[in-house]
Length: 374
Ligand SMILES: [Ca+2]
Image 1 (cartoon, rainbow, N blue to C red):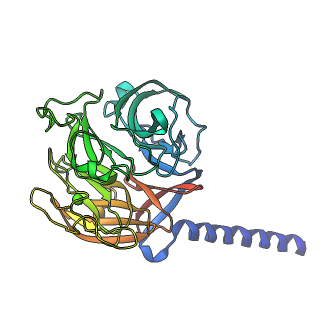
Image 2 (spheres, protein in one colour; image 1 turned 90 degrees about the vertical axis):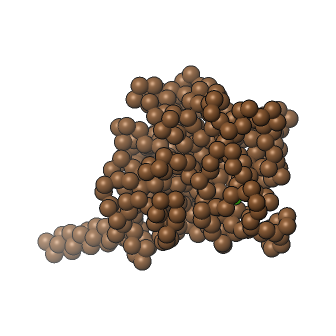
Image 3 (cartoon, helix red, strand yellow; image 1 turned 180 degrees about the vertical axis):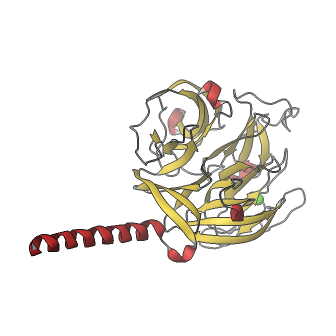
């Protein structure tokens, strides 16, 4: 009898400590004033997350897999039909978003580093229809030109504007940064295409013979964040600077955002980039920048009712510091910044239909974290 009581007591204690421990792991770090709940783990370098209307999540994994994760955290087998990707360095299967008309079309859009001729590669965007365990009727609607032999700076975030056109961020591929300043290529550019990949008639360079018509803005470096501001309807992006000088921009039609002529960053290890200047006539200033770099990835405006204290804020993930960055905005200006320690490289940030924010962590044991203010 005594033994049984001891056993019961021990079992209760074990259960109690397990509960305390899991709360500790999920809720850390305490000083962050952030409530963190782990929804799923075991993803391999997840890059992007998109909510389906039924509350499940589409998740890309960089090695080239697309999975569905349910609200309880159960991860599906990889969906069939994903094209082959160059999984190397920063390349792989990258962003994913739903067609704004998804309920009707079952269509998803995704970006990836596409293998090209002679060992080169480039950012590509495709759409396909989501079926039970596969994607079907794939069509590539954008292929970044020219292809480059590099495993860096694919950019590749996707954002649909209210007019139905799609913005694609295209990085300058690292080895070709001067081409961010010329208009005969898709390197270091924001691209604007229709949902079928055609050029909208009102794109800024359609009448110029020396420019590619799909270009929206230029002089960018590597943009791994893009979102439509729900209050202004404008595209906002962020981009990695070199060493220092990560930026937030509100790219406008036909404007030059300066890379690599002007930057608030420097060469890795120190030293000027170009003339080492931060301003120049005819080039746009970022609305905000970070020195030192936070290595930003993922971007979400918060407009849910659940947490009124977050209303109107912009959230950005930090790979380098393992943080979630909260920016308080007034119109097109950043008023203040707050950082929350996540303790893991934050790759993507999305607002869930339940009004929480959802983060992806960029690891071999990648996680989905649900966060809210504490
Ligand atoms: Ca710039």
